[in-house]
Length: 483
Image (cartoon, rainbow, N blue to C red; front, side, top):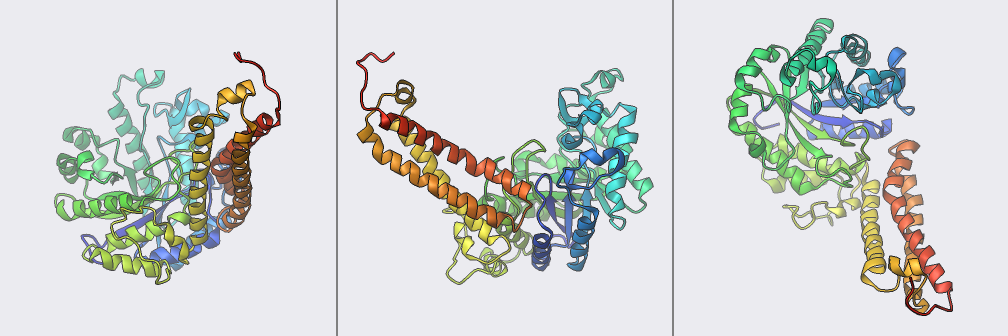
């Protein structure tokens, strides 16, 4: 590959709460390796088969050790280096939500962050998390220790009693984790997200000692990276860290309930990162991570599913791996990689259709689910429009009409037919999509997505049908006023 770095081009797999089936991952690994990726960053969260004191941190549908070894074997076959990610400070909701681990929280009410001043936090929890995950990754050169979005720092009584500010507490904990990784797993370099370091002074960062312990992964998912990362940040990182990584996004960045990645925004984000790497000479870039979040945190609903995000992933891989190519050439190769028929001709700018729904006609792994989600978007638009029309814009099925059981049966007959038709379509869609989704996910993830996306629409239509039936059934009405 051409470009400013022949380093690691890493695809992030966020597995939390929706584990893809192994044969889909096998097909995906082949595809991304053919496109030029040479590593994956695996964030297991509750999908790892923890044991012993941590066994309840695993979801009941977590991967087995056998499945993880199978996945790692697929990655090795494809020449993909595997980097595990273990959160060690914030985003530990999957553990801290449990009664048996709540005493490790920084604030009792919020299960996001561990308290770094609790002596058991490190010895009982953090070390054990790392050891168990690393036991299945004995040959890795890197371990990502997370440490992003630690929202509550120096907030509990234990921490405030130490009379240290949040920055010092953060640096102390990260250093302890990194030193443990380096001493326990010789040759392994810790990586960490950079957002908690970004606003430090150059002196504070240098004095923290983190420059000798970790390599930061600088993440920004906006199209205008320079606005969020002024030039002085690069000067600071360049002085402190021998190597720096960057992170863009191919999904999971532009809306907690998004259905399909916005190709225009994601491609602009990735191209903006290329410009940064090409023009920033004061930093030695080690690699680039294309992140693909499945949820914004452990408690959030699913955002874009991995199979429907394959077009975005491949497009952005090709763009960053071949920065000197004309965009049209990259798009032609993208069409080939997605096994698209000649009739599929994308808009090069992605302005008129940032989701490129016609890609459902292609034959990439996940294309049938991509097509199904496109059908859902159309159904959703029709359902929401019909609901708004009947309950707000028209005058016979508003909440006032329902509350007083007072409307025109003749006016409601056509609306009733439309509602029933849409309900039948939603039922048929639910059944067909459940069948498609089971090709990619276990039944728990399938049921969750359908409950989050399809069932609310069906419930809205069912309530309208019930309201309309009751109003149509009436054949005499009271004199006004109705109160």
